[in-house]
Amino acid sequence: IKDKNGKYSFRSFADNDNQRYSVKSLCLDGRGNIWVGTEQNGAVYFNPDELLGLGDDYQTAIHKVNLASDNISNIFLDSRNNLWLAELGSGFCIVSGDVSGNYKITHYGMENGLMSSMVNGFTEGADGSIWISTSNGLSRMDPQSGTITNHTLSSEVLRNLCNNRHTVVIDFQ
Image 1 (tube, rainbow, N blue to C red):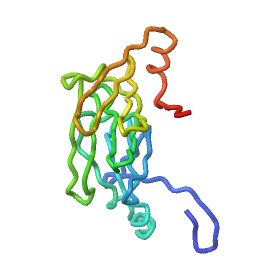
Image 2 (cartoon, rainbow, N blue to C red):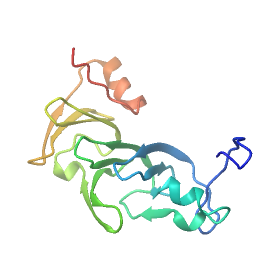
Image 3 (cartoon, one colour):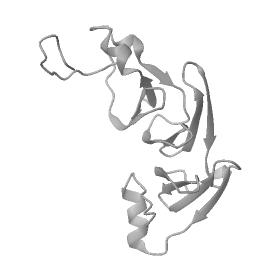
């Protein structure tokens, strides 16, 4: 944060109970909010402009989101401004709508056809589909229909890649 004298300093953020978070993922949404995926405290979001204007009383601007899991390993923003949150061990959820309180959370897990409940990461294909890396391979979701198609990986090396990485990248060339 830049102070009055033009010098930068670091600042740690906490919630109302002065709770610190073990941060696993960050994502800036289309409304200027920063979403934080934590290891034990789920997902929170805040607007950095509001925090900077509060001086030392910045805790009140952090908002907690109620999800199926408190371990959020990845957050991804798609081209439609939906947030995809990997709820480690519980699948994933899509947060859509207005984060001022009118947002909708839709959860997806193995009961919806997902290959594994251990979701690591997301990326968007050229057609708008979302590719999801899991501990058992790749799943592809059509956001319009909600249909999930699974793609198994036969190579042990590729399977380990999905297990140990939090990012999926598609090369469109």
